[in-house]
Length: 188
Image (cartoon, rainbow, N blue to C red; front, side):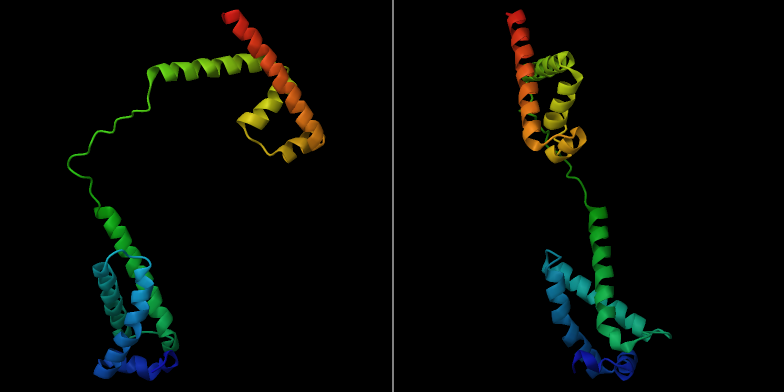
């Protein structure tokens, strides 16, 4: 039988428990479901559990009084039921995942107290230098280097060309370096 043979008579025989129809049903959908599930599930046992649960639910629905309304869409119905069963398995496995009894202590070997102090000192130095810059230079450097804004957007906002923006950034960086050098000379 092809998928076009799914009709009211097929569904009626399936609901009635006709052995040949049930055999065809499982023979037809087993390879389809295995291919589908193999891409989503990691173990053969889970694939088989979802496949069997899918068949069970489809057969239960077929046997209900109102059953399947459009027998020609049996394949789509089986696919939908399979998706639902698979999602239930995912939720169940996520819910039952337990932490191991003994969790090893995580040691942060990157934390170096002297490095933390250095980073804090550099941040303060940069903030002090930015505070001494003109508001225009400060805003430009902040947008370009800290906020990493798109330079085309900055050009539009400032109403300048990209070539002139490059000049403005160069000048602001030069003023930043000059203040930095002055700070360094005052420290030593």
